[in-house]
Length: 343
Image (cartoon, rainbow, N blue to C red; front, side, top):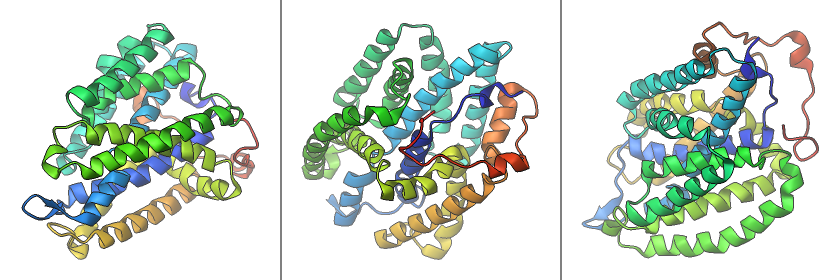
C-alpha cells in the first residue's frame, strides 16, 4: 500500500493551491517571454505596474506556505507507515531537485530546485523542533527578510516553516470551523495590503529591486488573497470555482511545469517577447488556465495522481504506486465545499 495515500486530502487547500497557480502563471508569462517593463528610460509601463501590484509576489508566498504545510503532512505519513523514513524523504526532495534542475533550463526563475534545497536544509532539520520554535523561527525569518535583504527566494525558508507550524498547530484541520478566525485575519490584512500596495506603486521603479516595498506588499497581499479566497470558497459561487481549481491544485506539479512548455510554445504566435502587449498576456493566461483546468478535471476522473505527481510518488516510495482509479472509486460522490470535513 502507498503510505502517502491513506490520509484524506484537504480539499480547500487544493483549491487555494490551484488559485495560487493561476496568479503565478501571469508573472511566469512575462518572465519567460522577457516582456518590457518600461516604456522609456526608467518609466514603468502603467499596465505592467498595476499587474505587478496585483500579482507579483502575491501568489508565490501562498504556494510556498502550502508546500511547507504539505511537507509536514508528508513527514507524518512517513512516520506512521513508511520504512526507512529519512531515505524516503531524501528521495522525495532529490527527485524534486532533479526535476527542478531540468525545468531550470527552460525557466530560470523556477522554484522547484530551491524548494528541494530549502526542504533538505531547513524543513527536514526543523521537523524535530517544538511547534512554538518552528512558528517563531518562521515569523522571524519571514518578517526579517523583507526588511533586510528583500524578497524573492529569500522568503522561502520562513514561509516553509510557517506552513509546517500551521500543520503542527492543527490550523489546517476542519477549516470550515475556523471561519471567524479567517475572517478576522482577512479584515486586518486587507487595509494593510492596500496601504502596502500603494506604497509599492508609488515607489520608483529603480528602488523596487533593493527596497522593502515590494516584498512587504507582496506578503500582505498574499495574506489577504489567501484568507479572502478561503472565505470565498464558503459561498455558492466559491463552490463552483473550487470545483474548477481543486483538480488544478491536486496536479500542481504537473501544471506548474507544463505551463512553461505551453508559454514557450505559444510565444512565437503571440509575439509577447520584448513587447508591452499585456492584454495578450492576460488572454494567454486565461487560455492556459482553461486548458489546464479541463485537463486536470478529466485526468483525475480516471487517475489518483497527475503524471508528474505519480512519478514523484513512485520515486519517493521506490515502488510502482497504483494510479488508475477503480470503477467504484470513479463513482464515489464528492462532498460539497463548506458542508463537510476538510480532511
